[in-house]
Image (cartoon, rainbow, N blue to C red; front, side, top):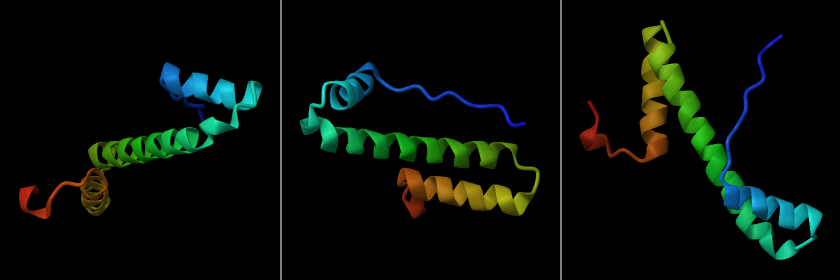
Length: 80
């Protein structure tokens, strides 16, 4: 059985979710979608970085490093 992980969100994001779902203030929909996409991007970057740092296979490590640098927008000229 795999361990469940927790994800932290900002107070602003949490309050927007509460307003949307509990108070039916649907004008927060676009803001919530934007915040969810930002959180998903952050989770993906963290996953790639962790894979890069912990992988024992050099090919997997290098692939994760390249994907991570692409995701954060690192210019090819500044990479090692």
